[in-house]
Image (cartoon, rainbow, N blue to C red; front, side, top):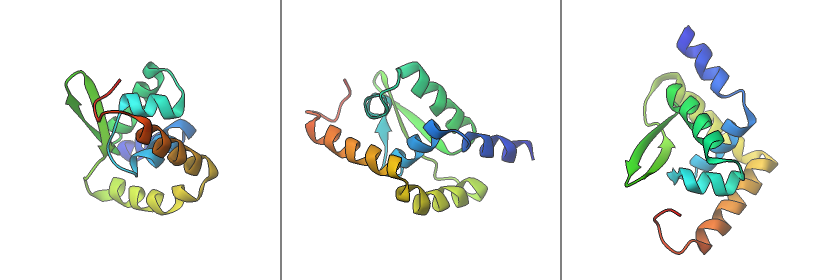
Length: 114
């Protein structure tokens, strides 16, 4: 029950929902999320840690940068991610974030981070 409560708390924050909306597009580096969300790296990292601890996202290190993606696990997390995948894309803020992500990635010269 405690794990389920933590999972729903992770979904109760606007910034974390925006991050999930972006990660539904695929794996992103923390620097990409910082650029799109226009938040300090420490704030984005704190939210990502919360999402990781709830089992919604996983991470991997590439050189000095951390990359995040939606978890491929099962159970309630997977069911919620499928629901979010359908419904988050309807939100105006998520649509704007995705537009900004496309523009940002098209201008980014290399796949490596800042």
